[in-house]
Length: 159
Image (cartoon, rainbow, N blue to C red):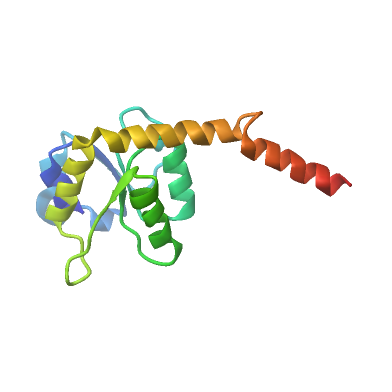
């Protein structure tokens, strides 16, 4: 991941344990355009206007947070529901791209760099992400379907 981020030649925030973040002087080479931290408030980061994409394992909470903030995804699932969530992101909602594994099950720096370039070159991915953000916000508004369904559920419990 580190070498792919370096190859991308884009500014980035990387949340990662420090022992994984410095292959052969990486930090010095990207110091002008990178911020590397061990923890960050994910929702706050994703809501920032400078965030262009979200490299995610596609867990449900991360999927909902990225979707509700209108951020396109680069999907890197590891197990269980994450692969199903990736399918929705890439194939159904079309607000992200898969990071494909090679024959050894690894994602190469060139694959990651290529997908970063593809994501930023395709305006439909960002447009779909923004459309989903709007749909999510409408559904939780006072008159939205999620709010209405929740009210119906509460009314049913009161009976």
